[in-house]
Length: 164
Image (cartoon, rainbow, N blue to C red):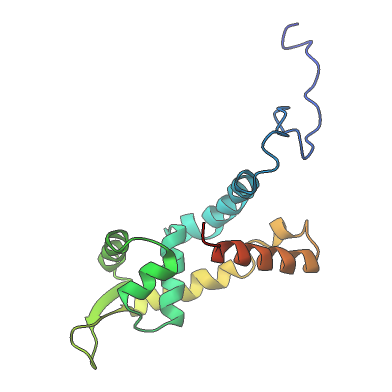
């Protein structure tokens, strides 16, 4: 059969992808399902925050963490973001270069370093966070309020993890 006479692909189902592939062999994997869902949420983030504010997800998260945790220590931020210290250093260097954050010695313990938002960083964090409050609404309309609450609770439970 040539392309003009081939049968249309079957409708997508939980076991069949939009491309007509049988995905039943991986449907039991939470990682697979999370990855598929992540594609949608990353597109929403990119459209509403990534492109307009020139922020990657980790940068957005860091700015909001600093907005809500004035003067956090780099070690605290690295743990909260689940990134190694060298990765955080590179991330902070980028945000310092953009004039969004600054590193400062603690006034109570000169050995300790604090990370603070600059006024520009404060403004960007506030604006981007405001957008984030509703940007996923169209995606989440497929779920009831109860399902949304349950999904958040279950994702948080998975994120906390268990020792392997």
